[in-house]
Each structure stands twice: as C-alpha cells, then as structure tokens.
Length: 471
View 1 (cartoon, helix red, strand yellow):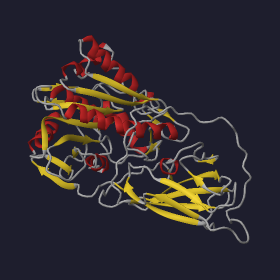
View 2: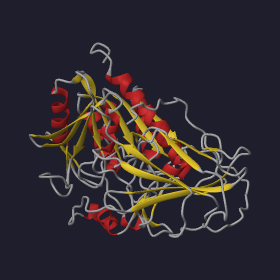
View 3: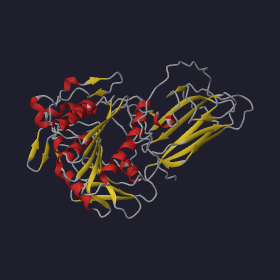
View 4: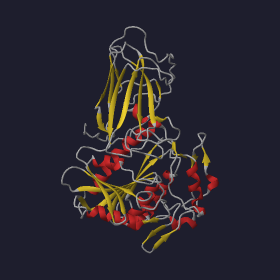
C-alpha cells in the first residue's frame, strides 16, 4: 500500500463551473461494433490511503473518442454507491484526468478525483461511512467506449481497474479504550513518539466512528476516537452533556506515555463541535480545538460540569422546513443565542486558553454555523481575545469529511439522542423519522474537504508542538 501522504497546498481553492452547454450524442452502452484498439485503464496508486489522490489515465482509444468513466463501491452493508462522467480522448487516443475536462455526467470540468467525490447512493438518503478501518473500500473503475446515458446491466466495460482505499496506514496501532467510563479507540503512529494528541468526536450518529482518527494517525498524530453514547455500556441515548466524561478522556490521553504534552487538541463536528467548544472553554488540558459546523451555545440537552448546570436554548418545531427531496432542514429551528434570555446558555468562549479554529460550510442546511462562529469571534473580541479564527467555504455543506469522500446532501440518522418527555427536544426527536438535510454543492464541498484537511493538520502541528513556556 502506498503510504505517501498528500501535502496541503495551503491555498484555498476557488471553484468555478463552466456555463457552456455541450450537447452530447446519445449512444447505447453496447460499445463500438467491430475491431477496436486495445483499451487500457490505469489508476495509480492502486492501493493508498483514502485521503491520497489517484491518477487515472486511459490509453489505446480512438482519437477524439467520447467515453464514459464510471466508479462504484459497496459499503460494509452491501449498499451501492456510484458515479460516472463523460470524457473525450485527445488526438493521440489518450485521456488523463489531471488535464482532461469532463464534458458531462456527475460533474463538469477538470476534477482528477471527481469520480470519487461525486459518488451517490443507490439507496435514497444513504451516507457512506467506513465502520471497520482494518479493511479498505474497493472502488471499481470502468471504461466504456461510448456515452452511457443510463445504467445498463448488459453494458460491458472495455477496461476496468479496482482501487483499494485504506483508512489505516501500515504500522499504525489501534488500541481499544475501556478505562473508567471512557470508551473509544486510540490510534498511535509507528515509532516511540511522543506524538501530538487529539480527541476526535462526531455528532448525532452516536456509536464509535474511527475513520477520521485512523487517517489522522497516518499523518503523525495520536488520535482518540471517542464515543459518548450508543456504544457498548455507554448510555443508549444522549440525555445530557456531562463534561466530566470528556475531561476524563482528555486526562487519559494526556497520561499516555506516547503523548506529547502539556496539552491536547480536539477535532469535532456538529453536536460533537458543541461539546468540543465546551471542552475548550472549561478544560485547561485542551490547547487547540477545531469545531466543524457546530453551535457555540447549548442546544437540545442539559450541560453539567462539577457544580455548573446549564439549560439548553429552546428550539421550535414549527420552524423546521421540508426540502423538495423530503429531507428536513433544521437551519432555522433553534432559538437565537443573542436573545437576552438565552445568554445563560452561550458558552463562555472568552475563558478558552487555547486556540480555536471554526471550519464552516456556507451552505450548511442543518446548523446556522456561519452566524454562530461569527458571534463567537465577536464575543472573543469584546473580551480583548484573539485566539479564534474562521475558515469559511462557499458551497460546502454540513458534513465535511476527509478528502475525496462523497458529499452526503441528506441522510437518515438512526437512534440518536432524545429526551422523549422534554419539549425542548421534541423537534430533535421528530427529525429521527425523516431524513435530515445537510446541504452542499458536490464540487465546492469536495474542494473544501481537501483544503480543510490540510488546514486541520497545520493547525494542530502549530499549536500542539509548542513548548510549555510558549503555552
């Protein structure tokens, strides 16, 4: 398996989709009759980490031939995800996705990894998640010698290639964590260390999600994928946020002999980002926090930390909106943290001693994350603090993942959290019966994921490798 890591460009990509309309001759998927050249399809590396790019080329095509390139994979439950794009070979009968623009299909323009990030589920409202990081996703790439305008079981590709997309690099150690109340999995890079330590948390899905932690470990970080409900003997439903559980996890990570102190980082998204921000505010162990599309105040469930108890800001069922797809947008259903009565539920971000990076998708249809981040930065500024900043990605949605992951525009989430008898959480519980809308434009979202992944690593390297005196 190729273990070469992609380096971040450090430059935020600018996205543009051409407005030229191209009318394609619609051919059947049978291919060209009669004798034809030797088609060859190559994808290198054929085995790599999932955050590494793949170079796709086709040769042996008739000059200027219109072709279809398709990608497909099955997740661990057997659900199918696939994509396709139409290309024209050059005069030498060759095609290089680093240079050639797609003229149609699931994306348009020059996108070397478009076949990966544009995959869509055959099952409505599916979300591609890697559950077992010890095995790869197997992506099949197929080359057809015509424009396949529809999926056909009888179509035979002229060339195919299978690519392995791994989430665990060679030598990375996975250590199950079951100490005290803490449940999770710690990923340690090869070597003696010490390594910068990070706690990684997801949101309302619950359970233990490891793929982001295992990928970060391939870049030299020791990462604790932390479960906080719906896993093993943890509560099956999230009924409150008990910060002492997360403090226990932070202390456990810092006490590990391979972790470089004096502080740790937190990487968090959605509901996890709400908790991540609370950790930054109240736990001195946390010196660098990344919050991806999360609130900056308390919603849905009570918060407890030692003697402190905070109540959530109310939400309003009648403000939810139903998208044409049938998915529900929660963008406007939460109460406004700026209202006077809600101020007691806003996290005291001015108390955070470490650095905070807000990563925001401007097309987030689940959370008003841009406005929340702006309010948090204003709150810091009003207290004379400058330890926060925001990366804003136009066209990106709520579920920002590592590079080349397909956009999940809307999906169902299964049993997450609910206070069944608490009116504050009625709207959150209501959303369980319908898919939730996350938002995002596929190409813009993909570019945001690639850029943000590099920025996350740079942020943690900068703030987790300082000496104690610098902190």
